[in-house]
Length: 293
Image 1 (cartoon, rainbow, N blue to C red):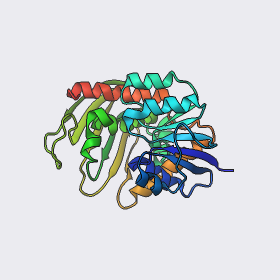
Image 2: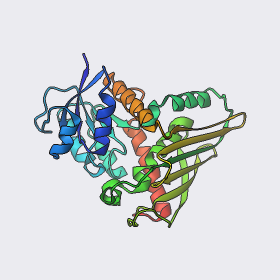
Image 3: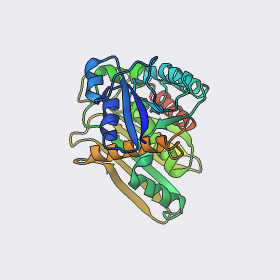
Image 4: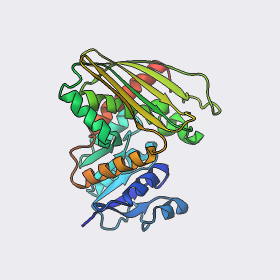
């Protein structure tokens, strides 16, 4: 029998999850919770209220970041396992408050379910590359999201909204914590400027053990959405794009589906609330270095 999932939030990311799960035999979107009639109808599942859910096995939280704490608190009071979209709280303080709720909680860092990244992680952990010297991550979106979303009070801005993916990825791949963060932001933009949300950010980091690292974040990349990774070791190196046109959407969908199916099995391969805290803490240090609100 398929795991019955309540989808809470049917906006851009919620709809993306719903499309990915449409072909899953292990997970069924049993209901959708969203204030928008059109968004809820687009998911193709019965509509429900958060305080009156049908019989479900767990919930996937895809509401805007500033509402993560409120919604997870309500779901935790029902005793439901929760898969919460990253960053699982707008600030470290909110994330710690979510952690204090207890219950089973997994955070949706889907990169951990991309086969090429899992293979790279195994190569690093097995010593195939030798001791890691340098790691570089890049995430470049085709177009900036809506201006209201880009407002730091809504999404946390580019470093929280996008950067936590790269920071979690660096930690997960190397097994090393973030030791220091510095950075610069670009002043040239495609869209009308949004205060506190530059369109291009470059971070320079050190990880525990002296590994140098970099993170590139861009809201405008004309050829399309791209995510890249490069790792250099003393014996070998690896570099590739794991999301790129024309099949980047399929890569993301497959990872989202694998993540939800892992959650349905009880988790174990996904990110924890402690992982979310570490990534968000690194993002907050980056915002401070960049003097972003």
